[in-house]
Structure formats: structure tokens, C-alpha cells
Image (cartoon, rainbow, N blue to C red):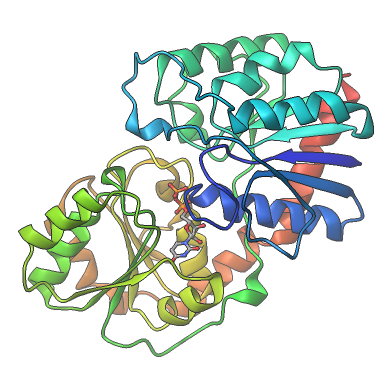
Length: 354
Ligand code: UDP
């Protein structure tokens, strides 16, 4: 297939602002190329990726959906990079069999009937706003089978969807994550530093248990971070910055566990896979994607949402978890090959319906 992937419009690929979408896009693109398909990626400029075919598109970024209220109207900046990427798609659509949209934005759904090339939409977050919910529901009705989600619990946050819906899960290149059987006395927390990720609960665990917490991820909200540091002075925490996948896994693999403390319905949670890939158990609130990934008591623990004491109790039971079982779960359920097969099946079904 000749594929055009259109990235998120909130940040350039490699910036980290796109969160898990960046790794997801990277992994799907890599496996599609390996399976013999042709592919181009559109990204807002300046992308730092050099290992995949990226076309850089200039323009102003969209604001992130998490910062908006449910009833806010759709907004576009002047010289919108989202608009510019879709103008490129309009002009070049005859060169492709299928377009895959990664943007959690209203415009690509709205434009779907205006393009001749079939468009698949990968929805990367749970429901956050009424206008987007409505256009996703309309697109699922007019173009059945073109809407993909990571998990059923993510899809369940959206109203009025018309089946069939596709659940694509996620996958990682396991060769990039090294197994470690003997961790140090430390715990990891990974993700964008942003309120919906609930970092303060992981910091509270560090303060209470005195187990050092290694924090890695894009600094998205410095007020939020300063507030946490102010509130939990003397907690044994260290912020290591936004690391490359390799540097990140070097730290994560030596941790006793990964803590996931989402306040929202996490669509998936790529970081859970990355930890499991290193043999690191995942302790997460039992909601959204992580609740569908973690095997409670086997590859980590699922804890009552927003319960810090539940997280602490789970940390005290970590010796019950076999780290080889964690790595094995990543290998059997979340390999890049399995991911490639799922996407190929989805794309083929869309093309068969055209
Ligand atoms: N990440 C990274 N470097 C870091 C910390 C995190 O590259 O130092 C990446 C991580 O690999 C993952 C993403 O940040 O792909 C976070 O994605 P996730 O799906 O967990 O959450 P999202 O940000 O999409 O809500």
C-alpha cells in the first residue's frame, strides 16, 4: 500500500509534545515499511526524526485538547499547520491508497467526505470535547470502519459511535528495551508533566515509602510541576528530563516498578508497554488503557483510582511479581509484528469497502 501518515498538529515529531502519539506513529510507520509498504509522514516543522521519511510542514500549532473545556468551540490559529498539512494531503492524495490521521482534531474528520482518498482516523485520547465527539460519531456513521481506537475502554468514552470499531492496542520494538532482573531500590514515573497524569500521587508515594522516584517526560506545565515540588518538599524525587527511548529504558529497567497515576481515562499508556518490555511491573490506577494491559497480581497491580494508600500497598507487594512474566507479556501481546498485522487488517478492510 502507498500510505500517507498525518501527524498530530500540537507539536513536531521528536518534540515530545505529542505524547504517546509520537512513539505510536514511529512504531506503526517502522513496521509498515518493514512489511513492504510505501509511506510518507507529514509533521509540523521542525521534526528531529531522521530515520523515517518525514515531510515537514510549516505553520502554527493547535492548542492541546486537554487544556480546553468540553463545550469550547473549535479554534484554529492563523496559518494553521493543521490546515497546511491537510492542504498538502488534498494536493497529493492521488499518490496514495490511504491516509492515516493521527490528529485529535475536528478538521480532519470534517474534511473526510471532501477527499477522494480513503482516510483512517486513529483516535489517540478519550472523549474531551463535545464538538469532536459529534464529528467522530458522524464520521463513524458515514464511513463505517474508518475509526480506530487503542482500547475498548477509550472508545466507550465517546457517544453515538456506529460499528464496526477497530481496537488497535499498541506495540513496541522489543529489541530496544533491555530486560533487567535485578532492579535498584527506585521507582519510575514516565509521561508528560501535566495535571491529567496525576504525578503528585506518585510523589506522595515516594515521600511516604522513602523509595526514590525517577521522573522522566516532557515538561508541559511548569506551574503544575512547581506546585508539586512546593507541596512535597523533601520527597526523594529526581526529574531527569525528556529522554530518548534508549536513555529512558536504561533508567526504567533498573526500577522496581512503574507507577501510572492517570486522573483521566488513559487511551492506552505506551509507557506501560515500555516498562513491561524491560521486565518492570506496572502499578496503575484501574481505569482506561492500563487496566486492560496490566495483569493484576501477575505483571503488576491495579489499584482503586486516586487511592495513594492503594499504590503504597501495591508497592509493598512487588516481590510477588516475576519480572520475566512482565517481559513475556510484552513479547506475546505487544510486539511490533502483531501491531503491523492489526493495522494491515484494518487498512485492508477500509480499502475493500471503497
Ligand atoms: N517518553 C519519552 N521520554 C521520556 C518520557 C516519556 O520519550 O523521558 C515518551 C514515552 O515513550 C511515551 C510517551 O512519552 O511514548 C508518553 O506516552 P503515553 O502513551 O504514556 O501518554 P500520553 O502522553 O500519550 O498521554
